[in-house]
Length: 241
Image (cartoon, rainbow, N blue to C red; front, side, top):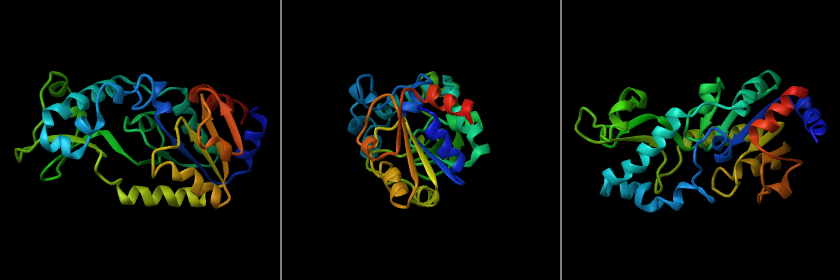
């Protein structure tokens, strides 16, 4: 199962990884979609959209607080650490849909965050940025952080109704176009524009590998499908490199 994938990794000069919610689930972070997804409890249009935040920031902060608390407790798993090790074998970048900072905590050097990061707060008016950890106790006590200008802070993540940061998206597309091998990990491959990243890599000649507990819409297009958890499969690959 691993041998052909290991061979392709050894042959590749440039490698990229795309990670989704399945990567974070193994660190105890709830996904947005699926059986135990956050959207089953929190309607994204009522809690996680730009219009919802402007209308009722207190309500949006119910969700933000839950996410921040969950991510502040989470630790990288063996899959995150395996991607750091893979940098010695040609991994140039990790493109992630996740907002939990776990790739950086593990030590990944080049992380492209398509949806932002909960580790920073941004002022809704003057755009001042601060570290979430500096306000963590205040947030977990149930309060809402305010900027010195008087406006309310929000996590520096992409809300519904907002566009992805164009610079990060373009860099991610560039990485996909120039990679020899792309590993798609723990993503359903249905949320655009992130879902187009593996397809773009494939069109420009990249070997495509998918790691997922279940088959996805991407699976028929990949060269190799490793069925299972990210931590198990990535560490299995690293043991054989």
